[in-house]
Amino acid sequence: MGDLELLLPGEAEVLVRGLRSFPLREMGSEGWNQQHENLEKLNMQAILDATISQGEPIQELLVTHGKVPTLVEELIAVEMWKQKVFPVLCRVEDFKPQNTFPIYMVVHHEASIINLLETVFFHKEVCESAEDTVLDLVDYCHRKLTLLVARSGCGGPPEGEGSQDSNPMQELQKQAELMEFEIALKALSVLRYITDCVDSLSLSTLSRMLSTHNLPCLLVELLEHSPWNRREGGKLQQFEGSRWHTVAPSEQQKLSKLDGQVWIALYNLLLSPEAQARYCLTSFAKGQLLKLRAFLTDTLLDQLPNLAHLQSFLAHLALTETQPPKKDLVLEQIPEIWERLERENRGKWQAIAKHQLQHVFSPSEQDLRLQAQRWAETYRLDVLEAVAPEPPRCAYCSAEASKRCSRCQNEWYCCRECQVKHWEKHGKTCVLAAQGDRAK
Image (cartoon, rainbow, N blue to C red; front, side):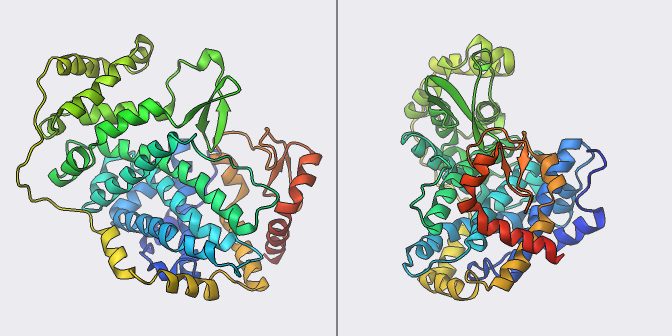
């Protein structure tokens, strides 16, 4: 694995320098697709670099060429497309595409970007290079975490299995809904990395996190609900690596990665001098934060010893008088990407959807073959296997798989029976991928 390389340094720099923002109308276009493929390559290379611990040129290139703000703008643009344009496409009754993969690529674009940001935001210089767009990113993370808390009261994320009666667009909507849950979990990690930089964040960003959004209280709710945990058949399951896994009884006291992210973010927001000076501990905030004491067990403190400082802070807070809400007149910077995009496209959602139906999401058979060829070149199997967090799973039943589709080499199965049952759904994609591979 140490010799595995997806991009040469010179190639990576060319791709990073070429990153740009696209209007909502152009999402799914040929130029946009090329950038999506480039982002996927950068994403896989960044994960590969982090996995084998050989320096991280992708993160350095993004900082050097000032492209982190571009990624944040593209992230928010595709989020808006999914909220405003995608539902219009799904409501068009006579739109029955033979292949929904071109639309899926746009839906998946948000996941690609947030995954890349999660990988590179581990480094503080990346957060600093986001400049003013860190405000927009904080708002984005807040939207995702609020949705995560809201959904946890409705039974958590949907299952990934589709029904036989669903049409392709309905299947795509279900995939988008499941993807939204995974995106929110990535946003949690990005937010935690932003809190690591709390001592260097602007006053406007701190105010946005602590006053406007009251993130400490939101994080307490996340710990209470733990939407990444569930009980199924009396067994504890955790969501990790895009799947639910049953947790062995001996492992149930072990701190999960997502719980750890929440605790570290709370530690940063409540114990840093900069944040303490600006966080107004109202009676509501005090009541919410004191709920944390029930979670601070000896087992947890053994795994995250620094939380002993948080435990002392809460003991002191219990004896402290609360503060009335501050009413000072404060001039502060506000995020502008979402508002600007909405202003530029207000009243145009139907027109954008109509344009994309006619010119982007109704490709010819030849166009689909060419796209299949590019996808095969982008998603190199050796790289995907190297960065995969776990062994492959059966595309039909999700059991651990050892057999791969011999025709397209993309899907995995645990047995011949599952492959036959899955063929009705997999067939068209398989044929296209195989044709694209032969065209190379």
